[in-house]
Every structure is written in structure tokens, then in C-alpha cells.
Amino acid sequence: MAEAVTKGSYVTKPKKRSGDAWHVFWHTGDWWHHILLIILLILMFIPIIMMLIISFKTVAQFSMDPFFPTFPLHPENYERAFTVIWRYILNSIIVSGISVLGVISLATIAAWAFARYPFPGRDILYYLILALMMVPGELTLVPQFLLVKGLGLLNTRWVLILPYIAGGQVFAIFVLRSFFEGLPEELFEAARIDGASELQSFTRIALPMSSSIIGVVAIMNVTGTWNDLIWPTITVSTRRLMTMTVGLYAFRNEMYTQWGSLMAGYTIASIPMIILFAFTSNLFVEGLASGALKM
Image (cartoon, rainbow, N blue to C red):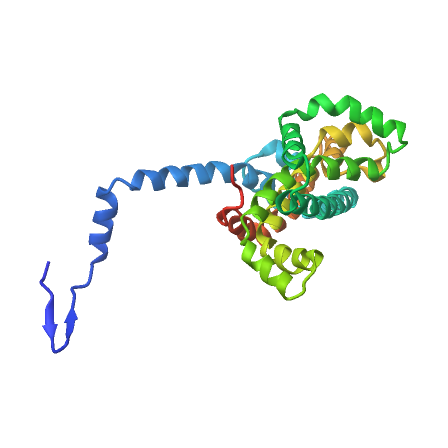
């Protein structure tokens, strides 16, 4: 390496050659981590690529060559699939959207009370709620079904929305209460001195500062309700009310031999979650990095 050369008041350093960077990368031992990640990335995308390839095939093309693109392509498979899939997507959007609003609305209030209001039996009640996290959902499946049946909610959207709101409270309260406890008390004392009520402190200070962790709770709740299969299967039998998971199962039975249309339907069904990930991934990482999930 050439030594640094002083020119006036400036010191010029020799430029690194690309070969030197590659030499350092190869001999530090990090190269095999990158190769392993690339291999895993390729393996992860193979099913998605295969699904896209098959979605443009007819039955004859799939029989001749199922793994590689064949021409002509058949985009009409997507039109045929969308005529069936759109209703299931709409139902899932309605159910997940209303459910997440209910979970966030109730959980933020409950978590705020547990974090900021010292009432008798607060800790005991909080730990009893946390104990529900240890109860598997399968154990409560039959009692829940008998309850909604007795209330006459079967084959309605409320049979999905209300249990989702109730079931999402425990984890949401746990996460939000941990975050609210970590907020500086000085902010709320200053707000009280300025004449702010408790409701104003909650809505104008606590909620804006908690937007990232509320986003994390909302994303996890939407993902859970969107992908749920067991509860919609046993409570909804009307096709016009079926959510995406149950609808795809019925769609698969209809298009069992129509592989192109079947894969086109799967592709369309994955678009909402892809959009959700694309627009909320930064919010999710920000919420996790904020230290709100304290275990």
C-alpha cells in the first residue's frame, strides 16, 4: 500500500481497490453466510414463482409441462378466479377491519387503566387476564360455539367479529400496558397543570406517542383473523359470508382439476397481505424497535 501523501493542509489517502474489498470479504468468513441466505431466499420464492407460472396455464399445458412457462399465456384464468374470489376477499376485509378497530378501541382503554389507575385488585385482575394467554384456543372452541349458537349468531358476520374482538384483547392489553407504563409521567403532570383532563391526556398525549406499538398490535391482529380457518369453518356455512380461508377451501373443491384458475385464485388471495406488508413493514419494525414488547 502506498503511504498517505500530505499536500498543504490536506492529507490524501490511497483509494481502495475493488479487489481489496473482495479479498477482505472472502477471507473474513462472511461469504458463506451470504451464500446461505441467497439459497434460502431462492428456496422461499420457488413456490411463489411456480404458482405464478401455473396460473397462466390451461389443463393441457399443465399436463405437458407443469414447471416451466408455456405459450400462449392464459390471463383469463385470473378473470375466472376473480369472479369467485372477490366476495371472500371483501368478507375478510370487513371482518378483519371491524375486529381490529374493536380490539384497539377496547384494549387501549383497558391497558391505560391498568397502567395509570391504581385501583384495588388491579394487579390480580391483570394477572388473571394474562393467565388466559396460557389457555389453548382449542379448549374454548366448544364453549364458544355453544355460546354463539345460543345467541343466534351462527351464519352472520358477528359470529366472527365479536369472538375476534374478545380473543384479541389479552395480547393487546399485555403489550399496550407495558408501553403505557414506560411513558414519562412528567408529560402527564405538565398536562394536568395546564388544565388537561385525563381523557385529553389519553387521547392527545398517550395515543399519539403509542402509534407505532398500536400499529404492531393491529398488524398482528389482522394477520391472525385473516388467516384463521377453524372458527369460520364451524360457524359459517353460507357462501356469501365465507372469509378468504374458508372460501379458498371451497374454491379448491370447485377448481380441483383447473390448475390454472386455482393458482390464479391463490395469487389474487395473497395480494391483500402483500399490500399490507408493503405499507406497514416499516411501522412494524419501528414498533418492535421502540422497546414496547417487554417480556
